[in-house]
Image (tube, rainbow, N blue to C red):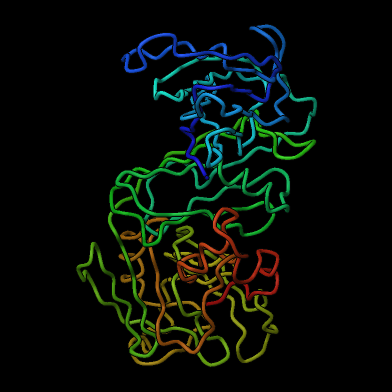
Length: 418
């Protein structure tokens, strides 16, 4: 039977797989007594005897009993940092063993609870230390984005310094990477590739939420030669829910703040052959000035589609160069026709207003375009274009494999366009 980190052990013959030495004990008194008896004589510890020596963190923790005079009822093991050891208890209560790795160079406290054949409770507290890792290779993680306030669409990212391919090793890493939000929401990690994970909730983050990312990897064995290293935690907050919806068919961009329509702006989007991507994108950056050239997206200089333009109030939504920006040269088409090379263009005054009213992490959604759907990964944050089922399939703890293009596919995507 599977057990939570607050696991189960009992008052009978116990063997914790970190030492040797098996003895027995009895309730020695009224079995209905409210005070648990000392179960020390029932416990065998398969680690260093007494408080000397160090236990091997590579070996699992185990508690057993022969079942002759009782059973294990609870085992709780945690280190000095407060990290619990997950484990499983057999159906007959004769064996508990750890299912999560022990940390190296750590001090553990194990609380064992038992119950004898008369129902009297027994207790014993054990302590031991684990040895230092023998490897010099460490897995570290860098959380993103940098600390600050973001829109409700901002994913949390985790960049690993070394690739992790094995599914069991990924599960160890993922289990140690914690994301908490206030208010609390349902969410999970998704492996983008061997060195990158993204975390998002089922729906957008709540407004004015506090989100913290931290790691419990330090000292934890991931593979024979790879151990978790120290990781700097991250704290970000969210602002209002800002969602800009661009309808390529009606040539209008409508900005909603906390569900209320704030402003509708006439726009132009990508013309045939340069259609704007459909789907949900996340604001990546705001750039007051960008120089855009047709040659950057493969348009030959001097051709009918060639351009070299100064662009102002440019809000970036893809790394390949899709923006919402000022396009004074196409004002006559804005609200009526799609004439751009993939960007969403508007008047300079409207672009300045949009620029001032969005922040990184806000949502920009395009509908009714003939373009492809925004890539989930590799060209910005298209994370929200995956269904929740497909998102969860990219978790090593849930099951399945990531869905959609890999970041290396970004090299084949179109760069900047106007």
